[in-house]
Image 1 (tube, rainbow, N blue to C red):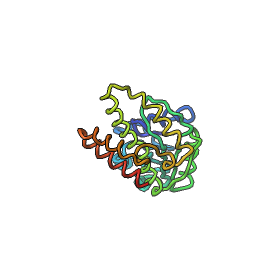
Image 2 (image 1 turned 90 degrees about the vertical axis):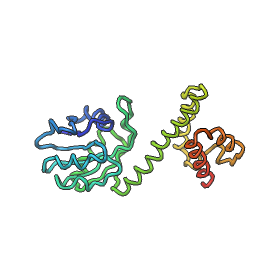
Image 3 (image 1 turned 180 degrees about the vertical axis):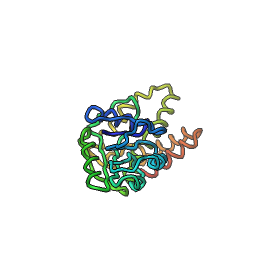
Image 4 (image 1 turned 120 degrees about the vertical axis):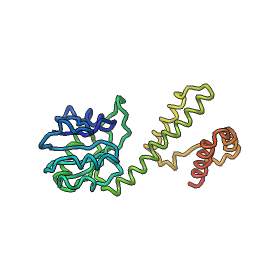
Amino acid sequence: MLSIIGRGNVASHLYSALKDSVETEIINPRTLENLPENPEIILIAVSDDAIAEIVDRLPVGNYVLAHTSGSVPMSVLAGKTPNIGVFYPLQTFTKDLELDYKIIPVFLEGATPEALSALENLARLFSEDVRMADSEARRHLHLASVFACNFNNALAGIAYDIVREAGINFNALIPLLTQTVNKLKHLTPREAQTGPAVRNDRKVIEAHLKMLEPQPEYHEIYNNISHLIQKK
């Protein structure tokens, strides 16, 4: 049986991905109510800062215990069972938004062969892309993911504000965003780069910066990223 501790986006999607293949139960992280006395596999899918507190409340045993964080080392789980590991699905998760689970890369780490085997078997129940990554590699992967996903989304939020001010629906930018990602299946980011900065089109850049003067934060972001592109 699989016990997933958490009620957030990651826990919700892991439950959806696995419930039809293995007996799975969501456990309330505040109460740990319904946690089996003799658990088999426990996945801790809570915020990074809450993982250690959850571990402190778990029983001692010989079960497999893993967390789903990209930035927290496996060692935070030590002390309750020798079979500790990490089960890190690399995706942005939002409740009620469907995902194609089979294409999600899952990065694994295990302190024992038993832990690694159990986590790999679990991952392959829904994903066709299962890989190994130790804590150091995973830290770099998580940092890269923040740039690739979180920062890109924040920049899309700026674009949303700009077109809304002009009375244009943000959906007009969706094909552009989609193609930007699709190109990266065939080109490196440097090869795929377009726009006024890579062309060093100073007139366009200066015009854009002039438009952004009423929004100093956006002005600074535009200027800094333009310089970054030109340095590449």
